[in-house]
Length: 176
Length: 145
Image (cartoon, rainbow over all chains, first blue to last red; front, side):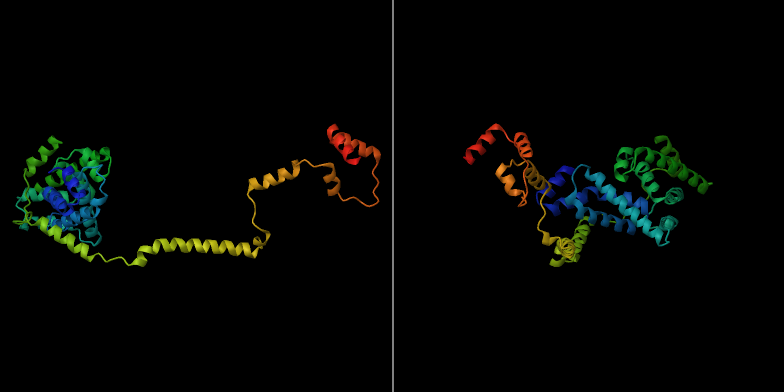
């Protein structure tokens, strides 16, 4: 079902049915996007549910000038960045803690090298991490990332380049 | 991008190393809808006074400003002098006062004339010739006889 069909159903009174379809359509993409940012499944689940709750509360005001996909990614990314920022404020530098725990995480099947990659990504500042993940793992065009993060394409390209160089250097150092 | 990605992939390989618990995605819609229903139930009903609060605040602010303005006018006795006129009304009244044609009779009636004042004949002739037309003079003559 397309975004337009979901929105038409929502506006014609089938609000819950339409929202179920929206969740069904986007749940996996959003989950993996969040999961790569926070690493831990339970944290990803919390952020994902908060994302959908916020989407439900503000769907009435969705004007349709952006795609639902971009709009949901923006909510999910902001929710995740807020989560990471709160953890940092509480002094729980969780990204790195979670990265340290990856090897023993039940829901992580990667080897030592993959763990090193995600540990390196976890060291990036939160917004740079979002840029890196959207570009590297999801291969999202800069133009779309620009709409999700509300940042210019030029700034995103520079941010990705810096992030890539850091991740590569940290990985090589970890594996040497 | 692809070249960069190839370098990292040669190090870390491709594929998603993360997993979600079995059945996690199947149950997600129901969990989200349950959470939404719980959230709606938790939202407290807004009491009437809270809904009206912005309007009441605005009304109170207007009342205070009106009261202060009225107080100032009352203390300076501005209210006793009557309601002022607008600029255009004021101008119209001045204009009417200055430009209104006045008859000779009105002129003499409006001027306080001293009882024993003597009117010099030359002044009178000057005034009549400069202020009145021949028609006015003929009128005065006709009224006199």
